[in-house]
Length: 190
Image (cartoon, rainbow, N blue to C red; front, side, top):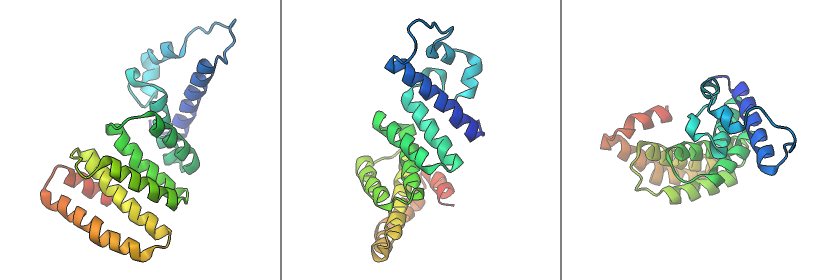
């Protein structure tokens, strides 16, 4: 969509609409001409939404709101929506991106302790056995974000040791492996 302010506003309307629909906030006597699901079936609206018609749900709306808020520099808003998305979702390709963006947002919100805690949690959850390109990039970025969080917490020696003993060997290993993820990692690091 490329206009993240408009996208964020549109998605806020969708969430508000879904919120009133779930909570019974709509008037019983009022009969809207179209329900929310009918609107998602319209091809013109589908072009405005950042996901496919069939996969629009509350968790995806929260994900796209988090990304739009991230692009707008609304760190606390982004944090709120990432937390909502991550509480609703199981690991998938989209979740890898959400996890790394969420930790980035925590660092931007000046919450390095929480960012460090989340990095450690997600690194344990993802494990080092993940082979998908998205997982490999996410794991590497989480290691870098963990080092950044340590630095923000003024734990300089621990950050240095972590970079030297954990991050550097991982980067070298990925670069030497010639895996398809290598170009994706190079692009993310630059």
